[in-house]
Image 1: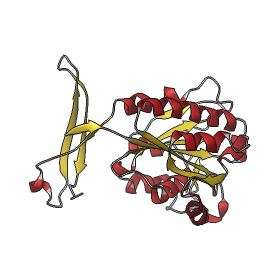
Image 2: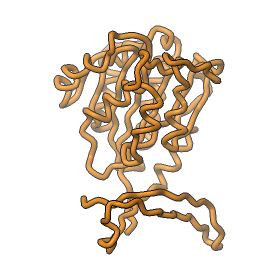
Image 3: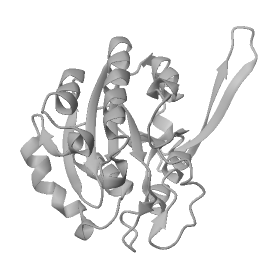
Image 4: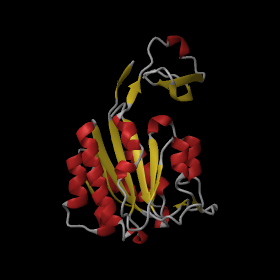
Length: 260
């Protein structure tokens, strides 16, 4: 069975000092893009502000809650993503310090895991993350907040991760045990990558391919597959065919079926 999808978007925003030049432009573009998506999709929005610590967050909620958080608190620059708001604000603020790891340098994976483990996503929602940064992902010398953790442990149901890099000189990253290429999160989850400069000028989030993808997304539900609940991986091939019968795209997945 195929049905129209609903989506929970989460913006992961690096609010370290080096992001000061582009912070206002990023916030404005997030609001403008969210407004466009809100007109065409059944969508909610959340946000996490981070550097080495989680400095602010809003659990997934309406477009109006996101817009008010970014625009109506009198904050400018990187301060726009400091502080907690929304119905779950106190709980999020209480748990945030456990993701800080001594508040060392920027870790988009820490922000990702904070949202994944604490936000109240709608059951069955398509989850989309967009990570804004101009720095590598700092691992703090461990694996919990490393891109490698995402590559090995992230399930398709946890969402796709898209990268917006506001430093054209960041890539390629000369990786080490302490820092990694943040766009590997996108590569690992089927996300996309957008490169801009520190002024964030001439860029619209509508340019992200995920915009069109979300506006043309569907949920596929398998029925009458009782015999496949056997604890084994089963290969599923999804083929997109155009009106003239030609194959536009095809992808294979290995799925272990579980009772909902």
